[in-house]
Image 1 (cartoon, rainbow, N blue to C red):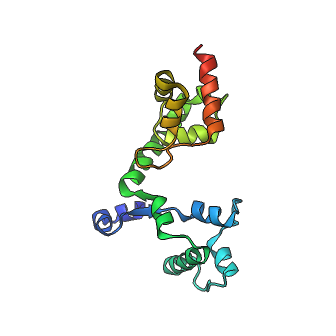
Image 2 (image 1 turned 60 degrees about the vertical axis):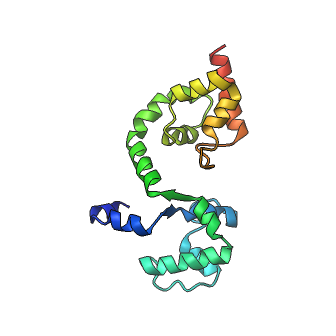
Image 3 (image 1 turned 30 degrees about the vertical axis):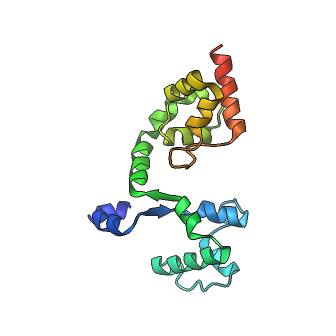
Length: 176
């Protein structure tokens, strides 16, 4: 997107591209491999006996990825479910610039929520005040609603009940 914006072609691409899908999480789920490098495109292509000639050339990589996706049985619907629109990506870029400040403001949660989870909270543009309001208004149900699925059915932060319950218990202790 940065390259597209740099050459002033964003409007053109927006007219023909609805959004972008990060295939790595989908591939990780399909292969069951999660460690760094285990799902490198070239390695997967070799595994599935897909031609790797021209690897690291944009067009060749797109063709390889298409074939890997087909071999793994990844559906168009799975790709659409993971798609981010241009607007969502722009919003994430904006939030990322504010991330250090947002992380400092969430530091009070470090005893009950991991750094990565606090980062997800910050990237979802959820503040300590929003968390506290959700807790005070609806308790556990409010936290599930805030951190779980958004209005489009996408997970905002997490649906992991252990994580949410731990946060709930922390807030219960803090605001007795």
